[in-house]
Length: 392
Image (cartoon, rainbow, N blue to C red; front, side, top):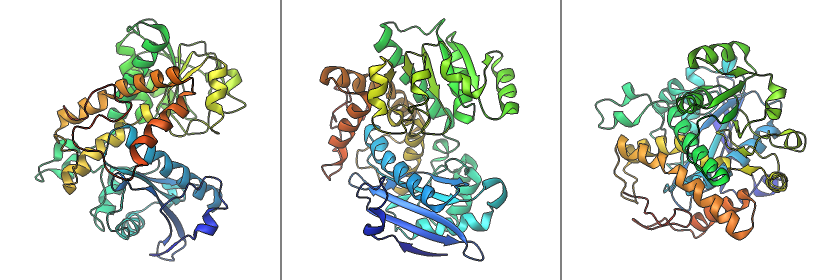
């Protein structure tokens, strides 16, 4: 494994560069021909936490753009989630079904270790718990490990797949958005169109169905769609290109990013967009385009923070990095995830009060937290948390 840090002059040629602290190019594998990229965007609040994505990018330029966007998004996500963590991300170029193996993931673990704790990785698209175990052979700076790997280390109850908690936070955020838009608290009888029935999308559907929501689902994998409908005990299957035009109260993107764009936004018939996918807006102006159509957009990094809260708590217990003096227990972690509903309420209220798009409102609140260059203090009430302390 060999690595080089990309020069600022090179990075500035990419429009997604945002004064990232470090972007490291890594060559891995027995022939050192597999390319990985690790980006640390901002570490003002603490170590930069963000997952490792394994994806078949068609060229390295696209991978660089993705890691720059994703790492920046993690800075904002971690800040809005009230975590003493910065933002980072890693990507590996390749087909995870064909190219991934244990030795390669160990090489990626060495790449993470090269940051000396400034970057902490976790699972993401194309990687899972078994990959985190392989990386953990080479670095301590990995989280999202399976519970059985953590037993006997006094924090096994915090490990495991974070998808259910990502779904829980998204569910709480949808409830908050529905209340903001329609004034009621009940979801019974509402329609929600869910794009992507992976681990998070399926768990979100289950939670919504418990509240009597009518679900419309789509996915590029037809087999997964049919299995999801059977597991949920109902729901309507629609084609991928038809999901935008479902007449539903809520459209919940839970697949890949960039799906809110000039082509899709005019098609939307939902009143609210609130889902777990990262980087839903293709361009920043699409936030305003949604507002102009009177569609309430819940910023993705605010509503989908349940997973990073989950792996964050595991990291706090594992590393001892806990400047906010959190009670590091599963009960407190779940309570922290459930406060995502309040975070959504605060962002939507701020946007309304300041006549802003909700995306810009969330960015402003996040920047107030991490741009000062110092961690939040214990018990401090950061802007956007509705007058409540982070530690309860």
